[in-house]
Length: 202
Image (cartoon, rainbow, N blue to C red):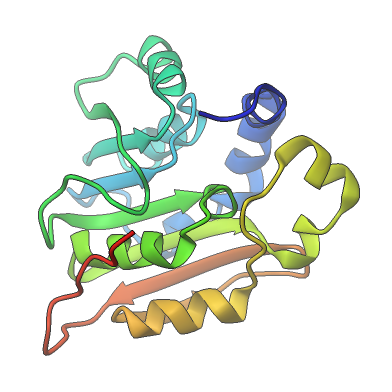
């Protein structure tokens, strides 16, 4: 469960506006909006990014997950759609089968996950060969901001290079890097491996 001050910060409507106008703006540059995709959104929170994904991908089905059951209840109350299913899952160990999704997204989630390397491995495991992994989040430079740390309490201080290197180890090839000084925006493609990616044990 998230701390209350963290929950108040991530549930602020300001983030929905920012995500819609800037952070997800590049998504339609990579994926055709008319495609029929199976999408896994990791760290859906109260459904702000889920709502954006539903609008950007009108023919796709989205499985939206979060570790916090209260956030899931808020999302279910907010969004009524037969194109989305909300579930309680941990980013580093989900219940999904291998190679199940065409697109996996993590928006503003990875810095909340202590086992962030396992979360990337899990994204690779459930992604179909050729599928997309799209990740956006505040990097180490942004996470060390004193004010940000007070309200968000990040569990992991990560940077773009570490993410790209770990993704490569899991068979995720960097396709585009839209990052800037404080924020990561990365697009990966899943490439076939000789061996299937495995879960990293806790």
